[in-house]
Length: 622
Image (cartoon, rainbow, N blue to C red; front, side, top):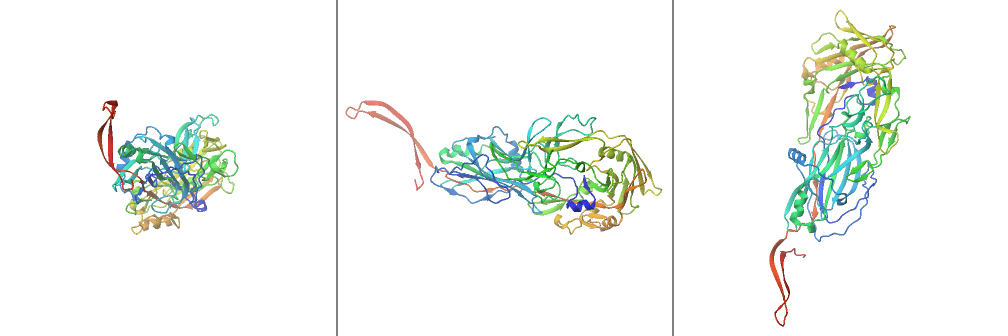
């Protein structure tokens, strides 16, 4: 569901309260391979600084073992259709990790980058070089190197270890392309493997969980679950996504053809990305959103954590230098609505924009035609801003506009209102801090409020004579503490009579031309049906909440919120250069027998020796 809080809060936070839609096809940056003539040694535990162009690395040169170098210019792979790469990468089975002594990792750099409003969202980047000593090590089909960047933590439910990545990974693999040239000038190319994303459950992360409510908040058995970053899940936009560099038999074939003596180093450069998957303000880098944070069970004010060794590349660890927000210990304000507010909700955004990187054009989705219903709701609180108590018996009165040519309105049933109240009301609760961050005290990935079962609730409604006003009379059998945040009570549903009227006008070609505007009682995007939008601007619905003493806690007209959403369809790119000495020699072999005899007598002095000798045409430089 997408939803809207009251206008004052939205403007204060510059962000609507909305569902975090998951992105499905995102980029992973670039990967390239370099066959070189020297080996650079990396240092485990090296600190690399985020948000800086300077890359820190410690290297030590090794004398070259060859005498001639040929370099090719950079080449870029065509990524318009990745179906072949996806199939080939999926068929590769990971067998064993690459031997840790076979490679070094250098030039590690982590950074946060905002989106550009078109082809990519905000992202957390990881760049690094891997240098594989292929002369002295065999890299076989299925060998792999795993790459992750995020917070290591352990599930309270089962003790399993996970990594909370700084955003969501890509969904498409990309080939690792090698382009090289022999000393005779012959140009060749090969795919030696793939960089592929790995995710257990798309755009989500493992958490410890228990379905609330319970009989006793002190007696809870936790189980493993997936947080999908949706509204109400307290998702932070992280995931358990990581990447895997998996090799095919390409390097084996090259070695078999040219031999160890002519190969020294496979040097691969990668730029990997984890994207903003919160579902809104997608140009913000993942760690810059107000939702990405950890939890403290001790701190009384928000803090920042700089994790140690939060980058894992094979068996090497590095520190990104990125700063992770840590929320303070929960207060009642974090758990409960503090005042009564009207809210708007819909299954999908009215304008969902899709970007095609290949054609560099935007297109509009048909979600509002398939899911046309909108809901107007109320977020209840135990008292209003003036301290007037709601109490155990109260009325919710809602009025809808009269019948018209543009919108169909329906009141929500008593049973649905009762169900929503049971999900929202809290009598007794306990805050739990779960899934501790490894290596950091009193810091957790998950915070859960567990509550007891709702008290008995009855809801009975009466309608006005003209049928435009309904009053829900609510009785709650026991005392309660408050109403949960993000658990609103639906009151009215509406849909346009002409469904395509909510689509954008023909002259709006993309999200940058589709801003949210506030006119009258309407806040949202420009609608194709101008008469429909004008009707919404001028015809609000009315919300009144009155306690058992006849005191109004809320009595105002309320408007509508219709929002856009952008879906960035990033594609992968691959570029790089390769240098080395790949000798393409012509050779012939002969069988030679050597006889050892005494010069004076001609008799055999030692057993004859037979061997095969090779003759080759060599380069002019020898």
